[in-house]
Amino acid sequence: SNPELIKEKMKVIFLSFPLIMKAVDGFQFPKIKFIGIPSFKSDEEVPRSRVEKGPEEEELLLRSVINHCQRDKNEHTNDVSTCLEASFYWEPALEESYSVACKIFEEIFSYQKSTRSPRKIILSFPSMSRQTDLENLANVLQSNECGLLLGIEDAVSELYPSSPAPYISITFPAESDVEPNMVVKESEQASCDDARTNTEDWVNNFLGLYRLCPYTSSVTRAAVGLKSVGVPVGGVHITVGHTGYCNIPSKRKLNAAEVTSLFWSEVSFLLNSPQDEWATSLLVFPAYDLDFDAFIEICDKIVEPSVVATKSTDYIGRAWFHPLYNADAVGHSTVIAGHAIPHKMVEQFRASSNDGNKKELHYDSLARANDLVRQTPHATINILRRSQLTKAGDYEKSLGHRGPKPNSVYVRNAVRLSDSLLGNE
Image 1 (cartoon, rainbow, N blue to C red):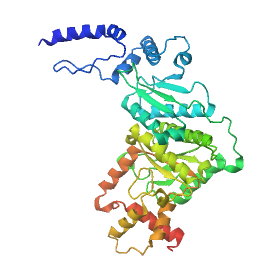
Image 2: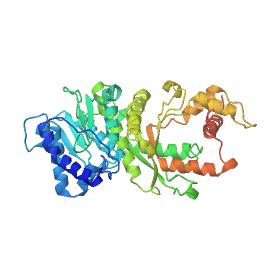
Image 3: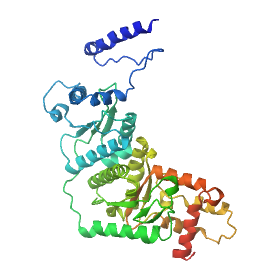
Image 4: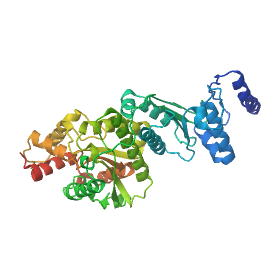
């Protein structure tokens, strides 16, 4: 019952652990919690603490991860790719899950673009602050829907202490049908300059002009009116994707990989930028302008699940826009992340409002106006800062009875566009 004696015995056990592991391959001690003994570092802190000790300890950790990944192989060479039959990436500087997702999708896109060999990539993130997110992301990537869209055969993760450091292994089909050096005619899609100009014009002369977003007035003034809750005015950062869309299975995988890679790259960029420089981001994909279904499929089946898996909802909001946006085609009857509020819900909000002066608005006109809010010149993803969304909510609550009524913005936008643009048909 002497705590000091117990701790001394535990030291002997842990010091003997490597020898026992060699003798009994694959065996692992169960996790035991001892009451009254100071707790050890959490599982997620151990690999990171080894990296923080310096280059020598980091090198030992790296080597142990490589040895662990090739534990079922007999050959040992100095070339990591050869001994693992995989491209190996060591990322000790990445801590946040959104940065990890950015790197993973960057390498998936890079693989699909070059169709290089070997057909497996392994990425290890020893400093990841929440390594269970890596497991969640692997589950998303190995799902049937995501796997088909991205051209992934399998995705598995292993976390500490099962592995010396957390890693994810992604395997691609043996016979890849991805074709490199895809050529797209200039006439098939708007140029990057045109897409940027069109998007800026939409923000200035549609979104801002009709105040569809109460906190954005132009591309240079977003997050306006929130100074009292500590949110500075910033710009709208516009990035145009170069995806050359073509409705061929091999190309669709490359397209999906690029959209997702650029999304996470933009997330990382926005969250690491000062708020007074960039308040929000618009990610534009002109190549998808004529294919609403394909664009929304990527957003709903890859982008959104990866955001949820990495708990990046704590950092960002997201919304899908498209020239052909049609809520009825989406087919939702309740609120879905990224999408417009269903027409029927907007109609219910309007019916339940206490506005005694409300004009008659036919359902068809309401539906058209509700879709019009989401109809941008090009296929677009809007990335918002969660911190600003929260502050905006706090600000509106602080206004009390003077503030906007819940869900009133959706009704107001539909009425405003119906009156101004649709003539309230």
